Image 1 (cartoon, helix red, strand yellow):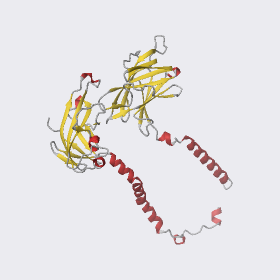
Image 2: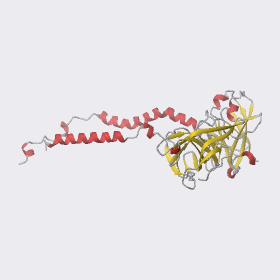
Image 3: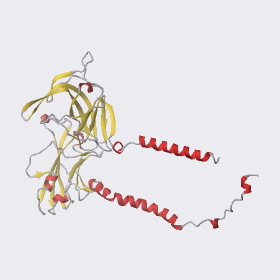
Image 4: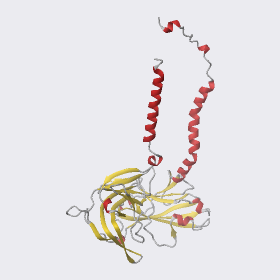
Length: 196
Length: 197
């Protein structure tokens, strides 16, 4: 005779168990919505800041045409690959690439509109070159993008923007120019090279 | 069975406490978790980090350095040794700059780059571009007993967080024929002529 046989178990009657609140299940289902929503709200500002710092979506600009960007009309006038002087001390397999833009300004507050202006060269492997801090071409008319932004240009004026890059000789004639400004990111302009 | 249950509970609690204590003592700290991600290698080997490639070409030791700056010749002496590391640098995917290096001696002593080369030419940070290799020189003032079995640490900036840094074992320091450390009396930084490593 076992111990259990002397103490009868209570009958397993479902009707006697306390009824579960329907809100328990609803709350669990609600978590599947609330958790992603909370993550979204908490990371919203970080995602915006990240998008502001990235250029992700290209707007293609055909050769010898202009595009609206940062309340200005941008056109790539020329891209020239230039040999470096042998005595420059720079790598022998490097060339300078000069990108020249003409920009029709439509609003005067360029320091805000063109904040963190970035002009880069990109090759077909996705490698990116920023303007070289070593190379400078003396010219009073053309400026780099940041200098142009703070030059006090008025609406309706036309600016010459020029950047100089140091790139490998192998890709100097194949790279394309891109322009991005903080106000327009994640969009950026990708220019087709004009005919030499 | 009933008597054993309290004993079992005590054992489970003790085991849990032991496990928690072990976890607490082995969990890396925040600084370590978010610290640099090391990419290791040796001299003459190209180390690839997220933003740049680096190859250590040679190390030169000297008792004094000379260099030209602001139109006159400067000399820097030391009671220890000058260690001058010459590297080749290039960017991996996008233009960047390489500005930080440290010399970590065999006993763990860490030397930052010297700040005594004011007005010298060719000092960090070095701008680097993809596909273009350039020379980068890093100069340290170290104790003589820290010259061998050292490691060079190179990164874009000081103490990168969750970003890679190169750690290069300096396994080919210059030696004389009898196996002693080869140390120049004076090294001209503008025209370095070192002992082959």
